Image (tube, helix red, strand yellow):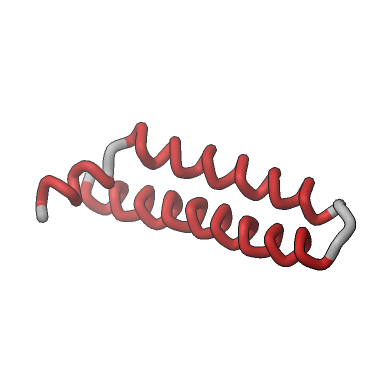
Length: 68
C-alpha cells in the first residue's frame, strides 16, 4: 500500500494529471459547441472526467505538500 501511495505522490504524475485533465476539459468545451443532444451529453461526461482528474491532481498536490 505504501508503494502505491508513493507512486501517486510523484511530482511527474501530479503534473500529468493536471495537464491531462485540462486537455480533456478543453476537448469537452469544443464538443459542447457542436450540434446534437447526444454530443452534448457525451461532452458533459467528458467534462466531468476532466475536472475529476484535475481535482485528483490538486488533492494529491496538497497531500504531497503535507508529507514534505
